[in-house]
Image (tube, rainbow, N blue to C red):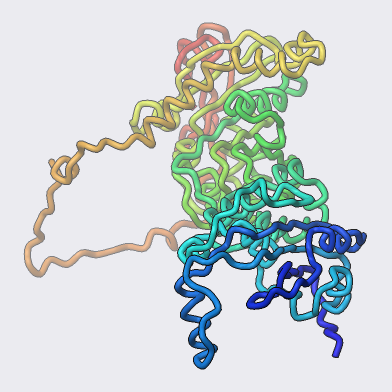
Length: 516
């Protein structure tokens, strides 16, 4: 009865002379070459086994199966010459057809099973697997294998994949695993294999989002920049230039930063970029879009948590190391606008201590201000040190680059290096681990006082006692620079100071420390 079992992989094995007899089977390489002459066969490999010898295991097996028959061979005798041929077909065909092509009985055609069946059979041709070597089989040289493909490379790749993944995976499964478990980006997949990316885009995208939300590590420190200036001062250009200067190792912008517009907070397409740029922010709109001031604090926390942050219509886990906000609103105005969205009394330091760097832009230059509390480990989070003044306009820098993006990026990196260095200095300080610190060092100077037994403490709930009309209402004090005459507003928590004018000797534009 004809064997109608269909498969895409087959192994054909046949002797030249029948074992135990001298009957010639009229089979040699010519049969294999003729059998391979079919378009259905897409890949093949074959070998002549003429150096195999009978092992003790072969002898014991023969005796067990044929207890009444004397052994036809001794341990060490050469086995009859035979051929192994493995083929991969498309479409699937049946055993009867393969047997007819190669001129062998159907029982000489094996249909292998298992995930790695194709390369398992290819590997057997040389007897290189440890199991074959343990059985004493002859190790054939690669040169004795005739194949339509680079079988050695495929075997080496398979071994590398097994070491990497632990099991045999299909190519598609490997790509998904690389995205889900190893953090490979969609861009990397797209560049490596555009067709595979196209075929499996939906699943790869899902794997990437799952990686970001479940497996990706949140940075230990997250730095935030606030850039403000009038229209045309180059806020967006400076935001992107700083991002590029922070990550010169990446070639493309979409590997470095993800941009969010001013109207909507949308994270569709966020692929775990290290920088998020918030364009044209307004304090009140930003707070509302993020669900209030409290959640805004979570998003811009310098020491982020591993949990997701709530956003409009859902939640997301942010793994970026840097936020860059740009706006036409002065820094003090931005702070006031954020707190205008809450009915609770909030400490302005809640926000200012989350913004290490402020950059006021003008048409010909810009300042780089550093949060004093963060830089010097004090509680002076509302004061900013005028660290550097940069005499440049970002738009003019790009015009001077005459479209040569490589040169422009290099110039930006050199020019903005003081910002990068100060950023790295603060990050390094906040992530540094002192291996020599001890528990006693931490506990030194800390005490616990005993209350007299039976002492009773009275507690007054302050929250309910605060009337809505008495809450902080964007109070501000006017600051006038004695040196240049500039007048600007600074937020204050004291209702009694609202609208008052104070004089300072110098402002930030005069390269001095400016209290916000």
